[in-house]
Length: 225
Image (cartoon, rainbow, N blue to C red; front, top):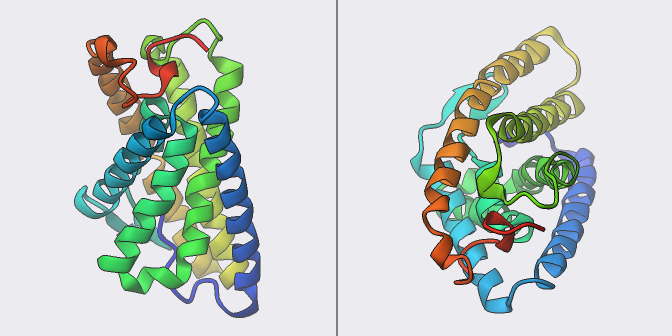
C-alpha cells in the first residue's frame, strides 16, 4: 500500500497533510474512547504491541511490488479485534514511522499519504462493527461472514485510497490506470487470507480468557460491549 515518492508531490501534498491531520485527530478521539474503559497502562501496552506488529507486517512478512504500489499483509482487522481501535490506529502510525525512519527512509516523504491510506479504512471498520456485531457478542464469537465483511471493508478501503492517490497525483492516463487496476486486483487477494488469519487468532484468543483483565487485550475481545 506504499505510495512511492513522486506519485504525489508539490502543492498536491497539502491535501495529504490535511487528511493525515484529520486522521490524527480522529485517532485521538478513538484513544480517548478507549481510555474510558481501559487504564492508561493497558492502552500503552496494546499500543506498543500494535506498533511491533505493524513493523513486522510491513518489514518482515512478504511484500510484493505490483502496479502503482506494494502488496502488504497489513492485518489491520486483526489489530482492531485484538487490541481495539485506538491502540491499532496508534500502532499503524507508529509502526509505519519506525519502518520509514530506520529501514525505508525513501518512504518518509510519503508518510502522510500512506498513513491516511491505513487509518481511514480502520475508522470505517470501527463504524461497521457497531452495525454488524450485536452488543452482546464478544469478538472471539464472531463468525466468518462478519470477519469477512470487516476484511473486505478494510482492504477495499486501502485499495480505494491508493487508487485515489495515484489518480490525484498522476492523472487518468492509460498506463497509470492499468497500474492501479493491477495493484487493486492483487491486493484484494489479501481478503482471501486475512479472514482466515483473523478467525485463527480469535480461536486462539478464546483460550486466553483468563488473561482478559490483564490489559493486554481490548475488553471487547472477550466481553460484550
